[in-house]
Amino acid sequence: MREAPYAFGSTYEGEAGASEESWRNRLRDRTRFVAIVDGQVVGTVAAGTGEFTGAAALTALWVDPRFRGQGVGTALIDAVMEWARSEQFDQVLLWVTEVNETAARLYEHHGFTRTGRVSDVRRGEAAVEHEMSRGI
Image (cartoon, rainbow, N blue to C red; front, top):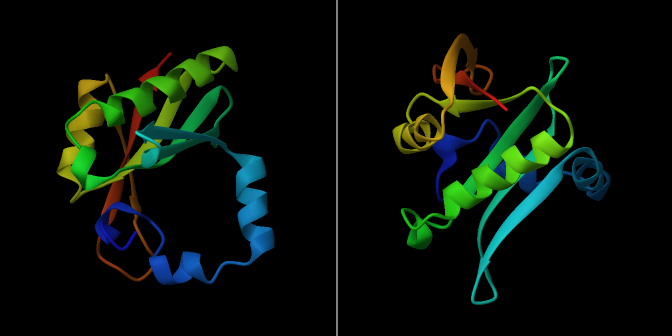
């Protein structure tokens, strides 16, 4: 979040101040995938039940800048898609900030398209994010 604050709906400061109970609940509510290279975490993504029946949510995809463009993002998206299939979801939804063009291109490359839904990234700020969807 410090490295790419424009890409997340929450802030580093807000997340760093979250209680242990809050973090434990997040771990229970989402399935986490981690990409590891030579024993080092180089990427992460979360997946869980989306807001609509039959929809999974892909959230918080992050790849270490030193490993971008090397297939880590693809591997993480593939892991979420396989998980969603195994959980019998019909589609995967995600939100991407309007300024995160690299992430939007990655999602488009993997078959995600904009749904037309738009939301504020953070309350009181002008930035928006776009919802994207892909069928299973």
